[in-house]
Image (cartoon, rainbow, N blue to C red):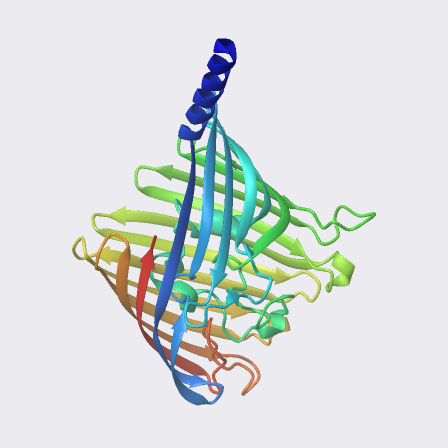
Length: 366
């Protein structure tokens, strides 16, 4: 009886120790506000809208310490509309934002499997890169759109929504991702998304690479992603993206610049985009940010082009809650009169060559 009791106690102690070395965290973001659109499908629109500065989402993140510097990691994240409570993009969208499990070794890196962000997002948008003003203050309105629906990205609400796939709106299913630890300022990444097509490894697949280097406060990075779609040449053509960015803090000012190049490999349609801006911290509570971007399509896209200015003011009510005001102005041109209407990401197309948005919003995190 004593031996049995000792065995039970020992097992319980081991289980308790393992539990103490593991953690599961519930996290989320909620963003709501009021937006005024000068011209949306031919009319002014004053509306309640959410998931603009950041997506509204909730998720579960877990870590288990395996010892020897090894860890098991997982994350499940789902996006939803605060105003309606509905999942995004629709029913049966549970954990569509991210769903992965992987292994991580301290000082080496991580390998993960599941539905994950592509490397355009990982190395150009999210920290430590932060080359896109959309991450820091511009949000959805600052992600690339414009009069480029002829780009024809499959499974895309407009054909060119976040066309360079940098803003985290594009995730890769059935993917294997390897991200190194940062060693001597250098961080590397590679991704492969299986097409799950019998008889072919290349049909419907995704290939991606990323690199980031930081020295002092200066950062530079680049990324590549090509996703093939069943609707484009039976899965043998797709959308290819590549880009690069730089960043440099100067006191309380954070400067960034980003270039991206997007191509439909079947039609030859290409859009290039360049963005430059900065975020200035006036006080620990007040921040202002602004950027300018220029987007240019090639002849297959009727040489349509767009210029856009985005500016925002943010005030931190606490470490987790921010109120903000944002203004966006886009104006466009192209070869075909009436064929290059302005179109800011996240709203309906303008009936003219310009579009303006003003927004007041509230964002909180947990």
